[in-house]
Length: 90
Image (cartoon, rainbow, N blue to C red; front, side, top):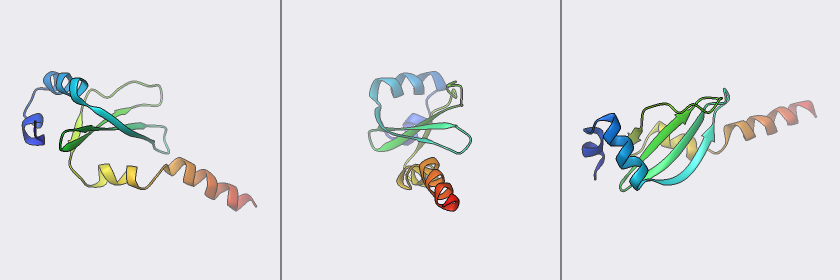
């Protein structure tokens, strides 16, 4: 299934297809504790988000490239911020 077809599905059908065909790749936690989970679906990516208490957002964000993917390429920003703040204390 390509991304255009996937985006044309209802939310329920997107989740059904997602859970049957996804491959987990990576997760990312922002400075506010929001968790982003990156998955692969054939020739595109899908991202789920959950809040600090673990509640999953009921939307699958599908994309091929761009800012949503860039944050995974940049590494764990919380870890980087922690290291930087430790260096400021020295």
